[in-house]
Structures are given as C-alpha cells and as structure tokens.
Length: 223
Ligand code: CDP
Image (cartoon, rainbow, N blue to C red; front, side):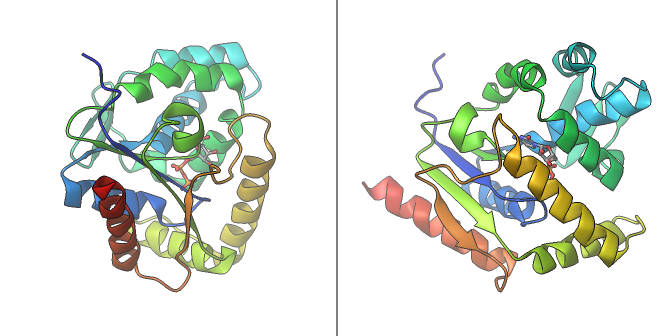
C-alpha cells in the first residue's frame, strides 16, 4: 500500500515549546494518528542508561534503537511489556536523548519505524526532523517557538504535575544547553524547515495554538 498521499502535519520546535501538547490535540481534533518521535529517542536513551551503554558507542546505541520493542497505545508507551510512559519523561532521559540523537547511524536506525506511522486518514508528526527529513513533502509544517523563560516555566509545571522534583534555575540552564546542542549538531539540527509556518506561543494557550494550526491546515486543504 502506498501511503505517500496520506496527509502529514509536521510540528517541531525547541524543548518545552509545547509541541507535544499541540501536536497531540491537533491529531485528536482531526482524528489523525500521532507520532511522538522524541519518545523513540527517549526510549533508546532509557535503554542505554539501563544497560549502561557508553553514550559514545554509536554502534551499540544504534543496535538498541533498531531493536526497540516499543508500542504506543492511547497515551501509554510500552517498552517490551513494561509501561515506561512516566520513566521516559525524566530530565536525565531527555538530556541523554538529546546527546544520542546527534548520532547519524542511530537516526538512520529509527527512520523506517517513523515512516510506518503514516497511515490513513492522516498523521500529526511531532519532532525535530519531521518536516525536513522524515516527511519532507508534508503539506503543512509548523515550527513553534516561545521564550526560554516561558518554556522553562512550562517544563517546570509539567515535571511537578508528573511527580518529579524540579528547580527553575537548573531547568533554564538545561534548556539553554539542550537548545545549543540541538541547534548546532551537524545532522537534523533544530531549525525551522524553509517552508514552515512559525508560531510564537509565549503568550498563547495551547488551545489557541491548536486553533491556529487547524486554520492553516483548513486553508491548505482548500487549495
Ligand atoms: O520536548 P523535548 O525536546 O524536551 O523532548 P522530545 O521531543 O521528547 O525529544 C527528546 C530529544 O530527542 C530532543 O532533545 C532531540 O534532541 C531528540 N529528537 C530528535 O533529535 N529528533 C526527533 N525527531 C525527536 C527528538
């Protein structure tokens, strides 16, 4: 079956820009499938931390990525038979994900897995290279931004809600470091695709951002 005519909305942005929440809600509103590509990097990071694989061992890390036994059901993320929905959200896992995501072989190992999420009636794909590498012909690409302070505040609330402890100063520092690492890496750096719509969400609620994305999509469908 060819899926090249299944519409894809690619949503990207820096860490804690709200892209996950917005992408998820857009998918729900349109009845589309949802790909949280960051979760795949986080799952690989979790496996690496648990198996104490050196974060410089590209070959071993890529093998972990290509051998990932993961499944997504509703809001639940499973690694083999274990529910790791909560565990993969820890800051240590996110920071490790950001480090190993710079490895080309590892990114290649996750490529095919991501393509398989493109199924009728459509897909909302969330993550770095969704519009630039994985789905370059996506009819709609959105890049969400927000000030570092707004993003640190969101991440703080998110972590506290999930029962993790958090400190604003540390978060802001982590966020700067993560931005720098994600923006400067050679492969799939954090930057808007040339044809992406930019949306600054610093002073917007998630619902307002969702409405804007839906409006853009409705316009595209008309043409
Ligand atoms: O929202 P945040 O960036 O903290 O987390 P995420 O979307 O869960 O992604 C975790 C890390 O995986 C990011 O820092 C990226 O470096 C990396 N990632 C990537 O390189 N490519 C993707 N398509 C998705 C995530």
